[in-house]
Structure formats: C-alpha cells, structure tokens
Image (cartoon, helix red, strand yellow):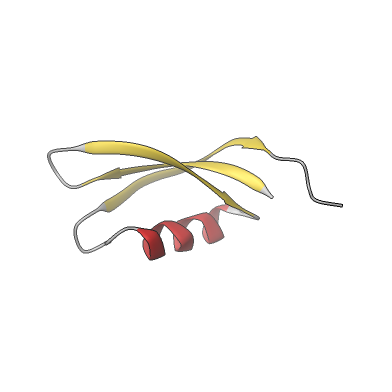
Length: 55
C-alpha cells in the first residue's frame, strides 16, 4: 500500500488529505467515494510515501 496526498477544493476553500491505496487511480476513486465530488473537486493526487505492507 502507498500513501497518496489528495488536494481538494470547493472553489473558495482548499484542503489536503492522505489516502492509502495501491495506485493513483485507486486513490482517486477512494477520494471520490469519501468526499462529495459534486461539491469538492479533486485538484491533484500525488505520492507522499509508502507504508509497510502487512505480512
């Protein structure tokens, strides 16, 4: 699993969050699931680090 930094904006406000996903496309899908994308626009998805995989 990798950690992605997601930047979102509603036009006036902007915030960032971290989401763990296997790839950027999955991170974008998770962000769309957790945040109302009719209000919040996903500005960027960038890799911020990797977490240790569970053995």
